[in-house]
Image (cartoon, rainbow, N blue to C red; front, side, top):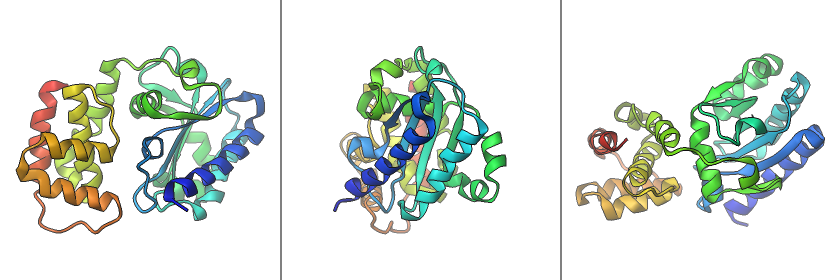
Length: 254
């Protein structure tokens, strides 16, 4: 059974629990990220989805939704789930930065497990990253349950999407040392959008870079693509130089 099928079965289980918890309040559950692009790998990917609701969540509903993800985490890929709950009224017409009712990812796993009530009480606000998630969703994603994507999520203005993706790479020369695969491939897909309007996955971004970027970076890009599939990343790659050069290409186009 492939990584994609295993992850989808897991997400179907989560989706069923969310239907039970939210009932008619649930507008839909929507897949985005690497699973939507069909390039998810168990070793390096997380399971990305958005939940749209018709009315604000209660504290009890928030705790129940996060508890489902905590319960499913032992069977999930190492990077786990990334989930945000958004009010339908904030999605069409699109609002930026987009307010969210609840968010969860592995970055918050320890806190959520230790203090579920406090975590759910505090985890709300506005998230510029949702502009990127919704753009991918409209471009490549799907409704796992509920109303169609286009009926719920309005078009994201280019300026909002650009602001979101630029915010994700502005510190790339520092970030690439700790997270070389993600940052390398992400820089490629950002430049691909700014140059050609392409909305790509990380893998597609690296493949685009092999065609569009100087040959001196091809060994790094091939290594990053292999590592994205689960291989070990070699040492002594020109990470900082690549990130600095890519920002010089990206920022004038933003």
